[in-house]
Structure formats: structure tokens, C-alpha cells
Image (cartoon, rainbow, N blue to C red; front, side, top):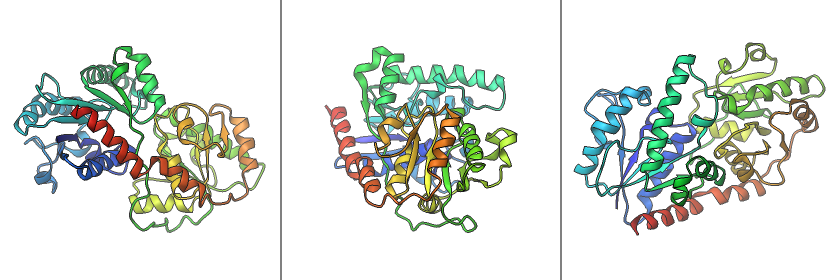
Length: 363
């Protein structure tokens, strides 16, 4: 089975959560018997991957692939004809949208839908005009791909149910493929000037990540107890100005796989404060390396957080402050039960479920 894979997220942001899932999907598609994945994406003219990726002849900036003009050229002008030329049997769009525009006979189409937060949440954009424009484009693109797809794969039952409620006509075509989570096969590289025993939170950009409330609670907790320093994997500009300069608060960006692994391993605890998550990748990534977690209740976090982990109301800052004071002392490592829990999202489980979904496509 020749499978076309939308590789654009992995090209634009290879170490992001979605980028890593696209690369994981490629790896396990290649390992399954009878499948041949073919990568599709846009690239600059001199990019070294041009020989191994199906790309338009035009010069496409890696960070510009999500822009409407570039997407239209790729999905309407380039993709349908190239799928026919290569006799692709299955095409998988990997970023909530992006199936070919127009009819492509004989190609079964799969949409990897991570979440619906582009439609249901207030996302961060450079201006109100851009936010309004992208909301219309996102609605049209996601709706088109949802109705066009032969099957829609979601990483959680939470996302599957949210999709079925908003688009009830596609309920019978929704399937759950939990994300693959396994530590990178590289030696962990600790951040040189960071030390050990800090608290960690991953992701700051979108309001649903709820990092401002987390930092507010942490700042208040440090006034009451010897609470560890807090490291945020994200940008300071994503926080309100009055919180950016809190003593003991650190920001990190642009880490590679080895540095990210080291960041998790050296943390005393991961805090996941999101009030809306389609999966909750950092929770399982931390547990896989034995790092304790504390997680907000609700959304897909209820599916990926073990019952022994501390939980909290994402919107209740005083209660979160009290929990932080209670957990101020260093936590014992989850050396056994953390990695054991993470195995349900590991390579063996992922490959088995992927095989079932491909068998359904063949049928």
C-alpha cells in the first residue's frame, strides 16, 4: 500500500508535539509489512531534503507553509495531480486539515485531527484582524477535511467525542489512535546552567495552556514555602508583563531532542495546567522518564494522567497555590510505575493500533 504522508508539520517544527507525531507515524508506517510511505511537503529550493520529499517546484519557506496562499497552491494545484501520478492509495493529512482540494479518484483519505481548539478556543494571533481571518479559514479547512475524509483519527476519546458532537454526521468514521510517546533514542543532555530539582511546564503560547494562572499560583506559593524554581518551555512574551520577571522563573526555547530529554529528567515535577488538551503529550513524556507530574482535571488529561498523580482545578489559583505548598518538598522519582504507565502509549501499542486502522483502510 503506497501511503502519502503530509510532512509539512515535521518540516516546519520537527521538535513540536505535532512534528514528532508525524515523524513517529512515518517511522512505524515504514516498519509495517506491505506499506510504503511517501512524504509530501513544501521546501526551499536549496533544501537538502528535496530529493526525498514530494514538493512543488516553487520556493516555499519552511515557516510559511501554513499561510493561506501557500496552502492553496499545495493542496489544490500540486497535491491532487501528484497523488495520481504516484498511484498513492492512502493520503494522511496530519495537521487537523490539509486534504487535497478537489476530487482525487481512488485515494482513501485520512485526517489526523489532534483537537478542535482552532474552532473552540481563543488562539493567539498577531492582530484581531488576523485572528478573525484565520478563524474563518480554519473553520472552512477543518470542515472540508472532516467531511472529505474516509476516516478521521484522533489521539484521544475526548477529541473523538468533541468532533462527533460538532460534526455528528461523521461519528461513524472517527477512530482513536493514541499518540506515540517514548523517550528519544539519544543521550539526555542537561541544560548547562539550569541545575536540578526545578519544576517544569511545557507550552506557553496558547491561552488554553493556562500558564499565567500556573505562574501566579507558583509566585504566591513561593511567598509561603521553599518552592522550587519554575522552568517554562516557551517564550516570555506569552505571559502578562507583570509575571515575566518573577524571581526564580526561567524560559527556554528551541531545544533539540537530547536537550528536551535532559530537561524532563532533571525536573523534580512536571506541571500540566491546561484547561483544554487534545492529548497531553508532556504528561506521558515526563512519566516515561520517571518524572512525577501534577495535572489539571478535564479534557484529554483525564485519559493520560494516572490516578496516583496530584490533580487540580485549572481555574482555581488559590487551590493550586495550596497544592504547590503541599508538594514543595522534592518528590520521589516514578522510576517504576511512571515508565510502566507510559508503556500503554509506547511503540508496541502504537504499532498494533496503527496496523488495525490500516487493515480497516485496506478492507
